[in-house]
View 1: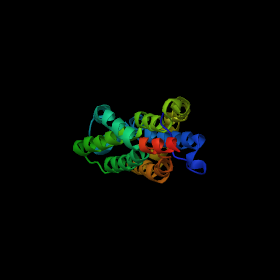
View 2 (view 1 turned 60 degrees about the horizontal axis):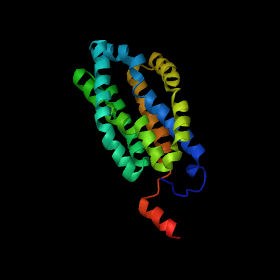
View 3 (view 1 turned 45 degrees about the vertical axis):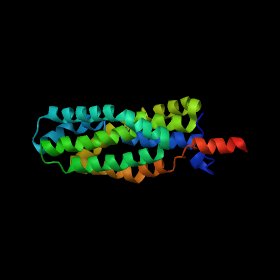
View 4 (view 1 turned 180 degrees about the horizontal axis):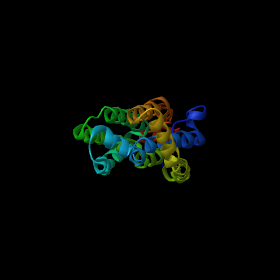
Length: 207
């Protein structure tokens, strides 16, 4: 069974892990999968493409996430999820910045390809794999907690994206979501505990 390091303080507690990962998952979903529900029309109008192309770009991102998911899972199994989840926030922010700079179809699809990589690294599959690496068979409870928290992603995303778009514009809205990934989600993921390696567990068992 996987175990975690004895991290002192709240960073090693299950409550913190559930709260931190639940919050970062909420931001990851809100700033990727749920964006087109509010911003598809403004983005399409702003760069002069049909609205359906925005959803086609999202579909491409989901395909990337589906194909790359198993490889990401293997990395998490070997090294734990913290580094992968931290990287996801950087990649999501990069994709959002690229999308904010888009001026045509090429950059639209390129930006969503980057977001697809970020979704692979940072959405439920990666989060659940990280919890399994930490807690093994005991991961079911934390997974349920994170699912409940992140289930509010659309509730957070849609009103906030609508407000920001009406107030600032769609490009600035994307930049705000990028900033939230870097300023909030990334530090929370960075504070997650790292699972003990098998050799470390064997060494502990000997003593």
